[in-house]
Amino acid sequence: MTKSNPFKGFQSSPEIIRLAVMLYVRFPLSLRNVEDLLHERGVEISHETVRFWWHRFGLMFAAEIRKRRIEGMRSSRWRWHLDEMFVKINGEQHYLWRAVDHEGEVLESFVTKTRDKKAALKFLKKSMKRHGRPHVFVTDKLRSYGAALKEIGAADRQETGRWLNNRAENSHLPFRRRERAMLRFRRMRSLQKFAAVHSSVHNHFNQDRHFYSRQNFKLNRAAALAEWRQLCSG
Image (cartoon, one colour):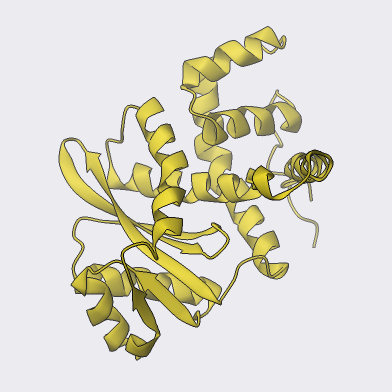
C-alpha cells in the first residue's frame, strides 16, 4: 500500500515547511521571528501559516523521530531520571513530568494538574509502555514516586540522592528557554503537544558537542539535518 503524501495540497514545498517547523520548535523564537527569518531567505509566509504548519506537522515529525530512535535502540533502559517541572497555565500551577535517560535523551513528557501517586503512576505506565522498564529509576524525594513504584513492583529499583538527579534538572533548561519565548501556555492540551514535539526535536539535534572533536560534531550535525529533511518523505 502506497503511503499518502502529507504535504499534498500545500503550495509551499516540504523543505520550507520542515524548515519553518524546525526553527519554531527547536529555537526560542516567536512565530513572527520565524516569519522574519524566512523573509530574509526569500520565503514570504505569515506567522499564522507557521502556526498552522507547526500544529499540522509537529506531532507527525515527532512521531517519526521517536519511531526511528526506538527502532535504532537509541533510548536506554539502563537508568532513567524522573523529575517534574512547575508550569503555569493561565496562572494555575500544573506539572510537567519528564523521563530522561542517562545520556540526557528525553524519553517522555506528561502534563498533570497534580503530582500525587495517581499522576506519578499514570506517567510511569505511559513511559514504560513505549520504552520498556529500566533497571534503575533515579528520582527526587517526592513520595509520589515511591508509592507509584511500589504499586508496579519496582520499589527496589528506586534511587534518590541530593545530586543524583542533576541529569533531569539540566534537561529542563532548553524547555524553560522555549517556554519564556512562547510567553507560557494557555491550555494543558497545548502544553502536552508542544512538550512532546519539543523533546523529540531536541533529542534529534542535541549532539553533546563537548564530547566530540569539532570534526565529528560537524559530521553528526550534518547527518541530523539530512535526516530531518527526509522526515515524512515516504
